[in-house]
Image 1: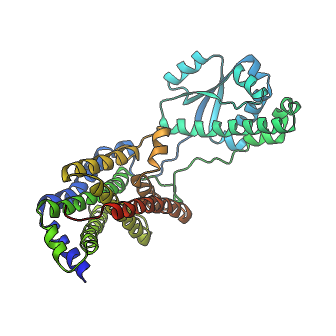
Image 2: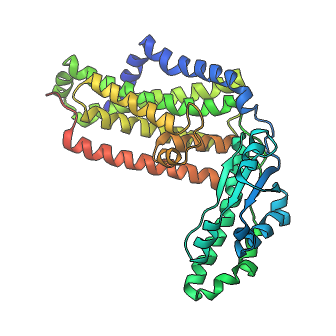
Image 3: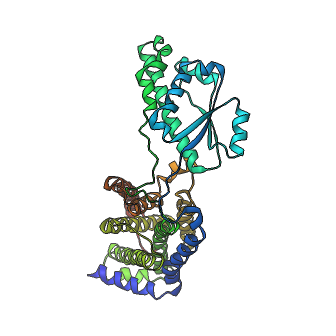
Length: 395
């Protein structure tokens, strides 16, 4: 009961601070409204958003055109499955393709060079050269399709290394290379209902994850307040262990974070019409995991910092960086940053919420939740190790 006494006292104490209430409950709703309204035209309104055919310009050198690579390329772009997704036309030169892209006559351009053919004939890994157009979505579709093609070519090169170089000359006519034309890539919006998320949905999920992490800052301030006001020594003089005091404070701030999640989800649904999906219990599970991540991250920062100011600054910097690289402020298409973001809480929390909003398969939703749980487990393990070494006591 002592833990719950401290927990409830901590919760009442925090809710009496007006600045905390404004920052944790009203500010996220205001940001969701501003960002959702301002960027609704850029991100859509949640209606069907399936891109059309990609207009591709194909530039081939004379050597490439007469090679097995050129033969495989022609088989690829004329295959029925791929023809549904793109239309292509031959370009005589790279300059012509660039001009067509600038004029809006093409969406994407692919260049097959002599060097690429020679590398492939030598059994080395090859990559196509491409020129991106004005539409980012169509660029992604084009890159995905032609990456599938080069993956198949490189697989053929690997087979030739094992079975002998004589396999290279016939690779273009082989069924395995032709299978590149039978691409199983389809163009659709995420989720089963072919619906795209709206700006309000996107920023509701992103801001919820970010501001729940800010609850970790209230935990940091609470832990340091007892030290700075020298009341921790009095608490430790009572017949209870330091662990009970520490657990009570963390439990109180955890309840605050969960209350924050409930209010943001309910208010965004009522005020902005945000559809959070039909998996209520999974939404609760994700919120619990974010709460766990917020508290463990706050514990780590509080115990390794020397003052409340440095701890708050460090925590705020971590939250902002994680939100930025995970696309919480604006979606980022840079591959390196996307890879880094997979190590953050915000990335998997955002993906979990969006997959539920889009009514994706349960398997996809659970994968995102499992990855979020893995990040939380690492943070919890780190917090436990640091607490055992440092502890929470008045010095």
